[in-house]
Image (cartoon, rainbow, N blue to C red; front, top):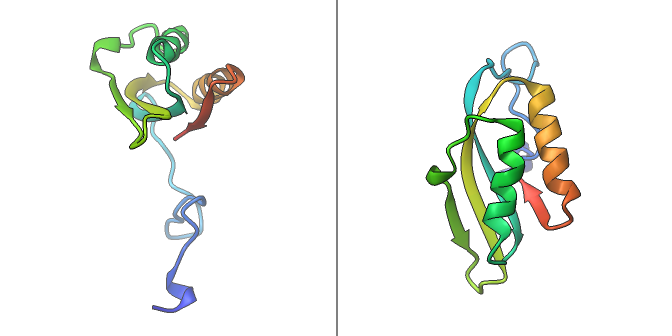
Length: 103
């Protein structure tokens, strides 16, 4: 394999014509939120998500601990209505100081 066959996974995959793929809103949008392991971490994430998606079903979340138990990932799906909603959600999650990454 040569370096030309590798791509930066942080960059969106380009479609024909050089444009990144677009999301058609509204849509179901999976999110993974990673933070320090704590009993109330999933509840905190759910409280924030509900402010941005009032119809969010918290019973469908998955909480997965890291191998050594230091971190947790909360996997969920929201009903995304637009880029503004997603940006506001991601910003509020990061502003808690408890979230390390939102994917």
